[in-house]
Length: 136
Image 1: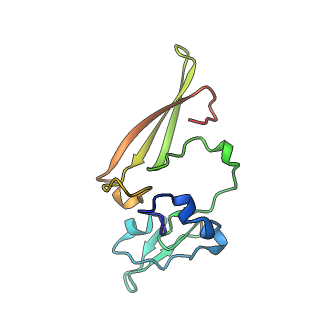
Image 2 (image 1 turned 180 degrees about the vertical axis):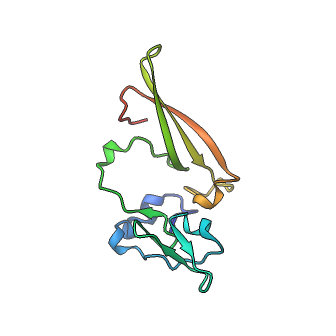
C-alpha cells in the first residue's frame, strides 16, 4: 500500500513515487511477515520490513515485474487489491470467465488495502471478457 491505503485514489497518491527506483526498500513498521506483504520478512530485532530482492516499498508491497502497457492489464479494481486469478472459456456464451481473489477494506472510504487483511476480508470476484487477455 505504501501511503495508498486509505487514499481516495492510489494512482494519484503514488504518482510521485510510482517508480521502483524512488520507493524505499523496506523499513516500514511491522509485527510479522504479513505486515511486509509476504514479500519480505519482519526483522525480529528492528521490527521493520526487509524486502525480498523482487519487491520494494516500505511494506514490500510493490513487486519488480516487467513493464506492461496499461491497456494490457487484465483486471484492476479501483477499490480492492486482487491476488491470483483463474480464467475459463465457456463455449455456451463464448466468453472468458475470470475468478479472482479480492481483499476488501473494512472502511468504505479506504482503497486498495493490503495483504494483511487477506484472512478476514477476502471475496471472490467474477469478471468476463471476449478475449483471454482482457480487459475483464
